[in-house]
Image 1 (tube, helix red, strand yellow):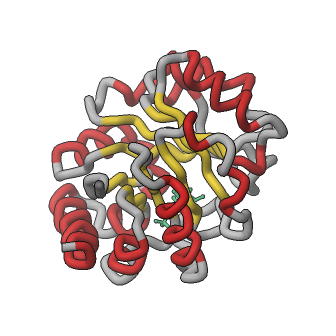
Image 2 (cartoon, rainbow, N blue to C red):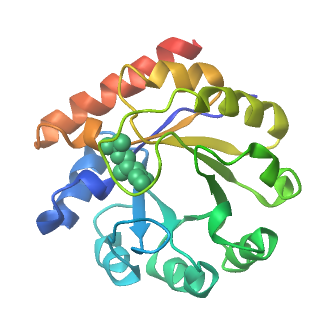
Length: 225
Ligand SMILES: O=C(CO)[C@@H](O)[C@H](O)COP(=O)(O)O
């Protein structure tokens, strides 16, 4: 059975000087999840924020906090992100030698577990951990920055991952270059959770966010209904 379409604004494109307000605005304007991009300047060439910021914005929205850890190592920080209020914690397969152990560590906190794959990483790396997963995040850009161009070759991988997971209740999330133009491609291939940063926050007002999220959602629905 198909999973519901989820729109997850990436706060990487929000105004960081008003982060709490920005999170509340996308929540009230239709976001299903809030996507948190955690970058370490080592696994990816950019640095964002850590558990104290997550904790500080937790009160701004009751929605699912969907935490994408672009950090290496990841295991030493899982508990801190769980305690800060993340609901889903996703680690990169490329950032952990022992993926199964990292997923067990997430599950031990009581949170949902996800694995992210860079565009060039084959989907076979998740074959033996499928039963530990709540979410597979397929990067549609190379991680590190917002505003990059969508990589269409990932659509084939989305379809292959959908076939691999079968009836398991696992969300397929995509992240990078998602717009009303690319949303139908990923939704038709089998993705149901769509992360978007620049395409949601462009314009800069809550009314823009509402319109931008609705455009992405409508485009994705149009491809699957
Ligand atoms: O994880 C990342 C980048 O590494 C993303 O979440 C970006 O923040 C998406 O930004 P857009 O491509 O939608 O602008």
